[in-house]
Image 1 (spheres, one colour):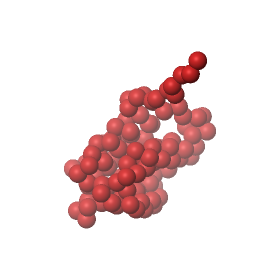
Image 2 (tube, helix red, strand yellow):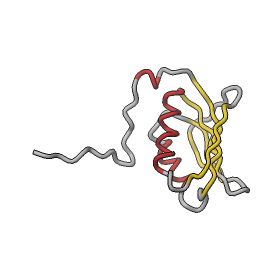
Image 3 (cartoon, one colour):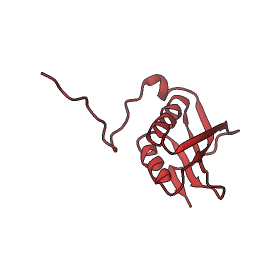
Length: 113
């Protein structure tokens, strides 16, 4: 009997491994370029963030790019960014990732306007 692969719903939690959850804390700034404004990029990113134990924000920039700041366990942050990349790959032409000094604390992940 053939069964179809299980699809994860947009609201289901990803299965995180213990080593991802227990990895060292990190905070990154990511600048996305391409056709990233006016396509739901910030809203999709926020929806993905709600399924991960991360904090930070996403916002449009005046130059047409989108800025993402994210904090969390390194393994979790990497999985989160991979999901954004996969979800929005048709819109991203360039991505710059830089670590941020110190660890700021945000109560949640949000869209900044």
